[in-house]
Image (cartoon, rainbow, N blue to C red):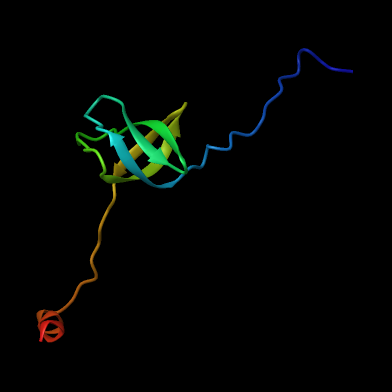
Length: 90
């Protein structure tokens, strides 16, 4: 028999959403913008004092209700010695 006191829960398929997204509407500090991620558009915000412009790539680090939490994509170039860089230019 169905118990009305028992709470029915279903897993949130977006709970662990991660990856990259493309900004489709600018995201300003303390305001929500929009991004395109995994084939659909999402509201997005960043907790840092950063503005993201249209077509910028951002990293999705979490979700708050139905709003993605984003941050800048961190680019870490491999460290090279100046002689290595010079030899590749020749």
